[in-house]
Amino acid sequence: MTGNETYLDQLVDEDTLRAYLTSTLGEADRYRVEHLAEGHSNETLFVTWGERDLVMRRPPAGETAESAHDVLREHRVISALQGTDVPVPTPVLACDDASVIGGEFYLMERLDGDVIRGREPDRFATPEHRRRIAEELIDTLAAIHTLDYEAVGLGDLGRPEGYTERQVERWGKQFDWAYETTREDREVPHVGEIGEWLAANVPESYEHTFVHGDYKLDNVMFAPGTPPRINAVMDWEMGTLGDPLRDVGWMLCYWDVDPLSDELMPTFIDRPGYLDREALIDRYERRSGIEFVHREFYVVLGLYMLAAVCEMFYARYLNGNSDDDLYPKMETLVPRICRRAKALVDGKRTV
Image 1 (cartoon, helix red, strand yellow):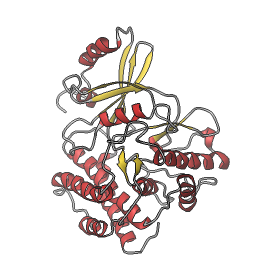
Image 2 (tube, helix red, strand yellow):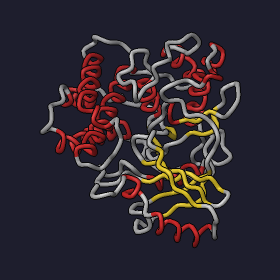
Image 3 (cartoon, one colour):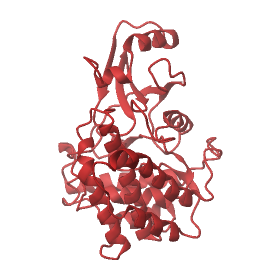
Image 4 (cartoon, rainbow, N blue to C red):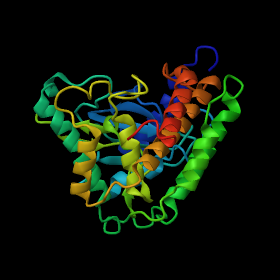
């Protein structure tokens, strides 16, 4: 950023966006754009257009790793999931013309509710409601994995054969892409060893289902009121056809009573009522009919992915392409993630 330019200025040219929305949605007497700083990957902005409250999703500003921020895939997925057992927001429009705001984007209707990140809502602070939060999280994941993806028109979204092998390779490349920038600041231990272990231990076979790709507590929204009820699953840029246990392993990285990061992970799931990991796994198996086998592999894969994501955050910070206060903390967090993954590989920790 230069001069008086803000990060919002990098994300949206408000005059150009106004002209585009006028041509696509019609005139509006109220217009406002606000950047939501709580997300850490694709950018989320609130757009007021007349009487409509909308949400914009676009890639982050600056250079990004190839295929890491596919917001138009998100739009396709939530459009296909309308009317299914998987709750999603209502899409409004998608724009693949990068000249409008500097990148592709889409708009969806804004929903009321809570995304649970740093603290639990007061209305949910009972053992009964906490248990229901966990059950809703698992039941919705099972709905994703049992979706008839052919019936909703997503049968060509990905190639499930070889998906898990490609995940190991892809996230290794994503880490390497970021490490070209970050290696001058500090080293990250064990990354190569972890990648080699994963490549050598990919399960020989796995289920083929629709997968979310980034499923965790703060990527769902809970509707107002009680009992807890998920009214939207968000952040679908990595939705595809693949291995459902990859989603489970990723989710478990974030559902940990010993969280690696207070900023990225809930710190309250040790309170009475929240299901522990074993209870989550048991419910998932019963609801989905899919057994969670090779547990260490999938959690190590999740940590390997997390290390790559966080290293990309750190690279964006070093390149001046983000104003997120979390990103500088990746300097020390990524090594901690890799040490935990190595402990699982070595049998010094268990899932």
